[in-house]
Length: 406
Image (cartoon, rainbow, N blue to C red; front, side):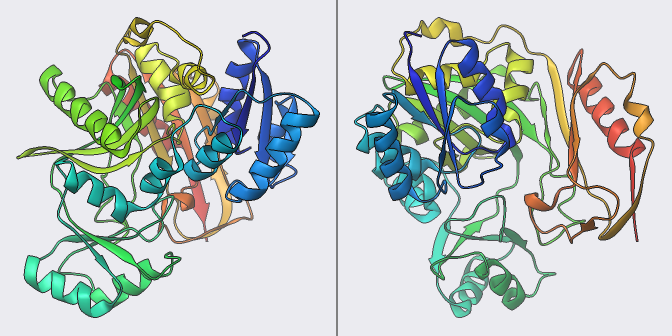
């Protein structure tokens, strides 16, 4: 790639697949992270020690690297929710990227919704609140269920589904714990199939690549916390439904000002048609962009996102999915308490359909109450000849591996 250099904001484990791709296409790689033991540092050429959220310091150190060591040609994050840092550093280095205005919309759920409302993008009803009284009044005027969440939350922290069974005060205070500015967003709950989408926008034209059916089988079990238990591909949507879902997500991204980059959609197909919950202007985490989309479609979306960040041209026809294979991801949710035993790990040994497996805890560690996605204990990604086989295999692994707590 003509000796180009890519700066990756975030050195977590999910940055590693993208780093390997960058190296394979001949790029020099720089990773920034405040953790001196960040996993991705073992795979990059250069490292910058700076918090992924400290855009000023990261930009300062990136400019210093630019001047003293090697010119940086593009900035990206891989599964790290830091759109403002990516845009800010890019602007300071005069590189192609989403503007900081776009990044602000991507980071503030209320401003995002206001933009969608103005541009006639279909969304649920929503309200910005700063008091329990406002929340109570909305519940009286519009009824339950409602979703309440922080404006700038991550990892599903503070996101609650409030029904008539829940105490409004407790739900409000729980969500407020994760708000930096004491404002919350209340939304109408949308009934319908929930879909994760991933598309690339090139010169204002959208190219949908990834569709996954999101699995919310545990809404009652973990109520009022909204915990997703993975997803599966191919989507159960028919071709027309896929087309309108993708069109809506891409139009939402364009309305935010994205002209070149990634548009990640959290979508619901309701009786009235598709509606947007949120749009992220970055690659997905949860191994969706790095592993599940390539396994399902044959398209390595991370490689093309890197090329867009570097302003490297390619034929958009390369983004047309080649296959539609079965892929599933499921998570482990052990009971709260100290792990005293993990059983049946030998069951994994001869299963060639297991693409990825990981447990985040070991014997002696403490499992906390499941209140957000950061509390999940591990995962498995499986492949199959179709969606059902992949799902059945993932669920068999989850049900066979026993994480015993006391």
